[in-house]
Length: 72
Image 1 (cartoon, rainbow, N blue to C red):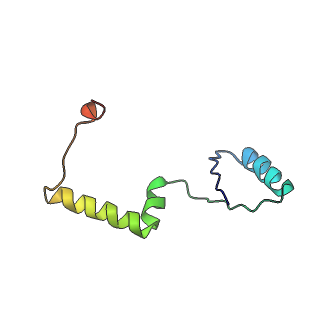
Image 2 (image 1 turned 30 degrees about the vertical axis):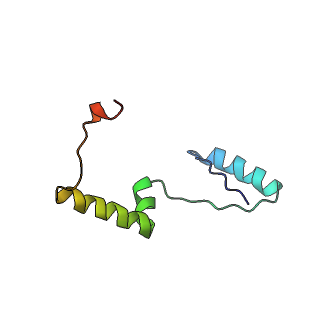
């Protein structure tokens, strides 16, 4: 099995895509979430990593990198 992720921003496109998937008799799920942060927080592993990273930064264990230096 393979997973295909399609980002749809309007209902017309959603209706067209779901019609095609229905015609092909493919199973699919529609995820209504639009906020990437909420998706990360919903995953316990990622939420723990996010919390630990924030804690590490507060304790001075992290490294701050200027946005201007990110791709140098």
